[in-house]
Length: 203
Figure 1 (cartoon, one colour):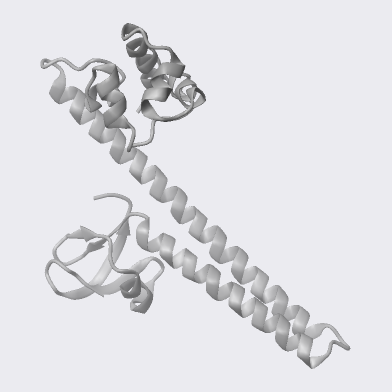
Figure 2 (figure 1 turned 90 degrees about the horizontal axis):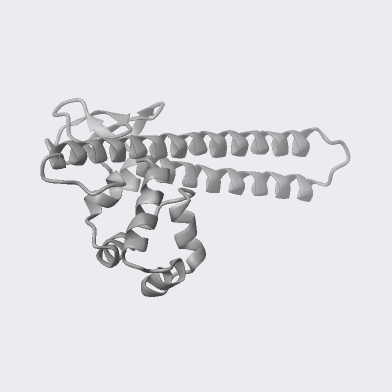
């Protein structure tokens, strides 16, 4: 999805309707600054605003995604291009989330190991403080692992090696499953077989 192209298209359609940025913003219940960001390609409208925005501009969602009016002749091509771009955007977002998971897990582990080092090797430290440091380190590690697993569950999908079904499992299933890296041994909700499910970025 070309944000610059979409932004120019929004600006063009707004001007066709003889609306200022402030007038369009008022109709949508947002600030004119947000409209300005769309039109300069800095960001895209929120999905919740897209139907109403398209209604005020007299265009379709498909027109908006393509940054131009889609005719019947090029409708199929434009729809396929938009779907392909959405899939690429989804994959990129999921990869970024999984990188965040690694960062959270690594930093939490290093922090915990540092606290263990401090609690066990600093001479003259009272036993109470040693225990307190270890407890704080463990709680921090547990919380970070919880959020890392939440991210892993929601980012992308799991694919059953038996039937090829891709799905987002329940959080407890991910936590309780045996794992090899990000692959998990779970029961497929489609075929009902328990097997290894591979982490994939998109369906």
